[in-house]
Length: 179
Image (cartoon, rainbow, N blue to C red; front, side):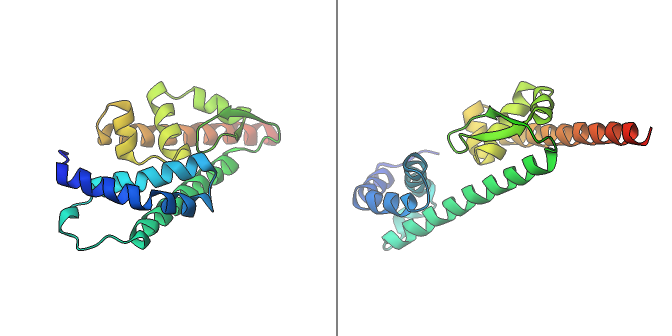
C-alpha cells in the first residue's frame, strides 16, 4: 500500500499528540514492552485505515478503543494457546522451550516439545508466530516473506499434525493400560 504524504503527516500528528496517552492506557494492563508494541500498532493501523483523510476528527478515545481491542485480542490468543498447552500436556514435569516477546515463560511438557520437533520448520515457526505470539496471518506472512494463504496452510497442517501425534500417543497409552 502506497502511503501518501498527507496520510503520513496526519498519522504523525496523531502520534505526537496521543502516543503517551495510548501507551499509558496499554501500560495499565501490560508490561512496558508489550504496551509499547500495542501503542505502535494503533498508529500503524491508522496508516492502513481507508478514508483516513476524509474523517472529520480522530479523538484519543477512538485510538484508545483500538488499543483496548488489540489488548483483548492478545489476551484471548494467549488464553487459547494456554488451553491448547493444557489439553496437550498430561505430564507433570514441564520445561521451558518456547520463548517469545509476548509469552517469555511458556512452559510445555517434554511430550509437546517432542511433537513440535516433528513439525517442519515452517509449521513450527508459524505456530510460534500466530498461536504463541498472537500475530495476525498478514503479519506472520510479512515476517516470513510468504503469502497469507501459505501461513494459513502451514498453521493448519501443523496443528493437525500436533493433534494426530497427541491422539496416537493417547491410543498407545490406552493400549498399554488395557494390556
